Amino acid sequence: MDQSRSSGRQEKESGEGFSSISGFLMVTIGFAVGVGSIWRFPYMLGENGGALFLIAYVVIIGVIGIPLLAAEISIGFKTQKSAVLAYSELAPGKLWYVGGYVHLVAGLLIISYTLPIYAWILKYLCVMLAGGFAGMDAGQVGDYFGAFTQKHVQVLLFALANIAVNALIISGGVKKGIERLTKILLPVLGVIMLILIVAGLRLPGAGAGVLFLLQPDPSKFNTGALNAALGQAFFAVGIAMLASMVFGSYIKNPKENIGKSASIICTALVCAGIMAGFMIFPVLFAAGLEPAAGPGLTFIALPNAFNAIPFGGVLGVLFFLGFYIAAVTSSAGVAESVVGLFIDQFRMSRKKAIAVTVLIMAVVGALCIFSDAVFNTLDLVENNYLLTLGALCIAIFVGWIWGADKFIEATNVKSRFLRGWLKVCVKYVSPIVIIFIFVSGLIG
Image (cartoon, rainbow, N blue to C red):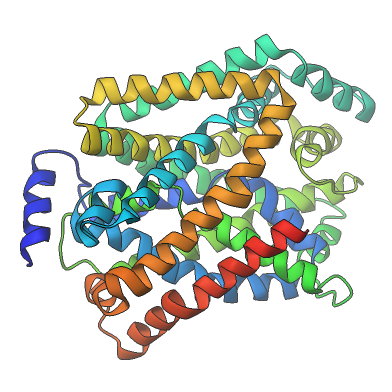
């Protein structure tokens, strides 16, 4: 073991760490399988060529997602330090540590400006439990959503409740907090999704939903669809959101195969997106409803669908419970990584780091709840600039500054083919693709 890793490991041993690699995998999968997988991916799959989009998405995950995720994890894994200190150790005396602060801001923003969405999910879970949508027609459900989003104080209260849930989870630390909870909630989420899939596929007319998802449609698969697959893969994996790098620093075993772990995480992400599609669209088509994008799918079309099918009230509760589990494991994962950086970088106590994190979440979240302009601006900054530039920073740093060969050694990958594949993808392919995504976003 080299001296730098030994020093980092000695510091980390007195602090936080996962109990095992399974804990790391569960927490990182929980972070990755969030709102994007349950909400955004299924609709994009159906609207952009079905099976053709899925094939492109899987290829992109393999060529870009797995190598970049392995690269990000390896920075933390090699140094046993959070982002800023990790960059400083691997490139001493250079300005690359600024990338760590970019990841910190990206992480803070993603758990803050998305708070209105988490508030909607929590509210709908409560409404479904109370049977609040029963008897409503399509127009009334749509009006309900529109009216609720304008009740800013009520939305804020649900957002604050979500912040409290996050704070409670991460107050227990890594092992007793986010790891323990994720090991419970992820299997629960999997069971809920399987129940909804089986129930949905048994409904008359469900086959149309399956065709919507998987039928190859060349007329819908074009350069726009390919770009959509690139963007979805890039953001779904959660590159440059800080979490993977910090979680990498919590892995204790210096011989852990990081390439294998990254592959498992990305495979789980793809499977979750496909399962979400089979969970949502058979129910929707069985109810005779057309799919809608964005909030309209989850908060208007699906409540209407649950009203129109047998046992819809029960299935609706299960859906929004699963949706909230996916959301809270994702947000708590990023929040834990932010807290971990504050503890590591600024020598804060866990209580103080949590207090600072939730204060920032509350302030930024409130601004987004009361102002659509703030929400839209932060969404643009996060997705079009911070995450893209942060990922480019990781690719260039790992491939060219720290060095691709040192990165490959840190991953503990033994296969000569896989080592070469990771090296080429991180050093050459990833920067080109990231620049393509960035430029496409600017001119689009």
